[in-house]
Length: 457
Image 1 (cartoon, one colour):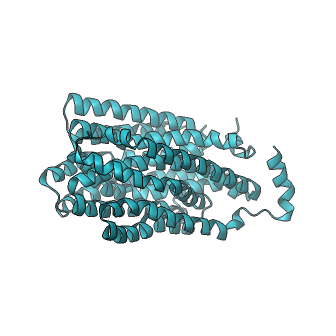
Image 2: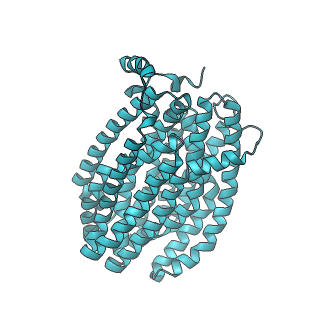
Image 3: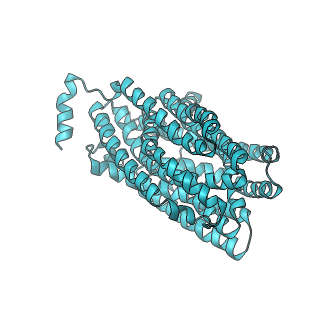
């Protein structure tokens, strides 16, 4: 069987969804990992422990940032080489990138333990919440290498046309996480540390399966004799720097959110932010999953220099993102109260804060998907500079400006308004970049006949 047939098929909605639906489902299940922790922690331990999960998020994002960069940037570069018919070189680069991730994982694990105590002792937390933070993170960091391998193998399974297997691994990991959360917290009363162990073991499923899958030479991508090319590593890092920037600045912005909320509403406010971030994270997983699924198709078409395919991929993708955006925003607004009630009792002060905050933040869902797709699009096109500009502006520049200005004017309401305001500004920038770089999708006169043929299929 020709493993490249999926990329050579005509660009239709049906063929795109064959790639995207498994990755959307996979991404949604991955988002459940943290959400499940939150559900069990908030109901079995309390909202103080729930706020601790959000307070540890910046350190976790720092630990995984470099792996995210290498996974996304490396996947685009490798699939471009596959499209150029350089299979052996692509597999050598794949092997090298996986080994680099193992080294990075060990280094980031040590860095996480070194940063843990100074961070949580210096932000004015109560002794109870600081203790929860230390307990959760110290257990989570034990799984750093499997988590980084999971980040990579997820994308490479998709690139190898094994998106269904990636989905199965994600579902299995999610189910294992839920079962272990119940066992560790509800049966053995291991506390918030048990939730971290359950999450780590859930992530490890994809890592273990990936090691077996990519050891077989029948896979489009598989391990080969190590060949280190510094230029390839540099290109992968440059191409994926937008995703690393997103992870890093998301951690920084999360810290700013937490600090401002601690000032204005205390630790209950941080718990409310955590609940709303779960809702936004779930919606983001839909767009991220779609972007992951379609990215190998874009990279392959770009490697072929097939503008008609690229143009149609863009048009269909924008329509899909628009539909998902409208549906997710409507669902979030209509089901705000039931969503919040899953995490906390109606009598808890956290409930009122989270309900009001979620209804305001829901506006961001109308813009969020386009911004995530635009950044992923330019990464797939091996244009890491534009992707980084979009990601950094959206996640840091616009968000920081909104967080500094709006809470000063509107208090807690300004914190909730910051996300929609930042996403709207990012949407305008994304649209401008797509217009400016339309040459990727422009079909010249010699290609018009080919484009008509593709559209007529």
